[in-house]
Image 1 (tube, chains in turn cyan, red):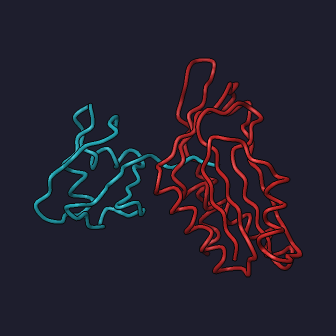
Image 2 (spheres, each protein chain N blue to C red):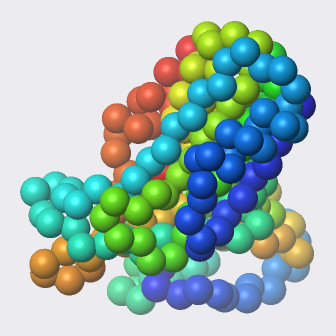
Length: 70
Length: 152
């Protein structure tokens, strides 16, 4: 997403999908829209999750492309 | 069961890993080692080197969970996983997976499963230097298929 860190204040827990619709890429597209054309993986508190997972107000969330180690 | 999971910039030694596994995990009859090295070409381009980055904290947890999964499936005596990060040249070692078990079958299978899961579940990313500049390496669907096959 072209950014290493971003702080978002949440008043209540929300789903990963809802969070993705709040975050915009440099081209103005939301992360949610972008995930329809590319694979964007999500980790909440360092565990891989899908879009239905909940994000709490103190969660650490990471979005990244498919991994390519090994 | 003995386990050691390391993410480091430094190279590793197969000899030392063998000695460590033998010393720490008892008398195992089968020890299987896999080492991945940097290739000098990818997608028809010459590759001058790689830069590897990872998600500190999460990567160690993922590797730990992958070893847990292998230990759940096979009776293992020990497992060592070492993954390098930072700048690497063609021919350099990238990854080591070493597994010891009572017999070779378990060691072979566990080593392969750990590698297949690592390719798709551990949070590492590679950027390669090519004649035109740099590019992030894209995930291969064949790697995903290999990892998924273990879940069948």
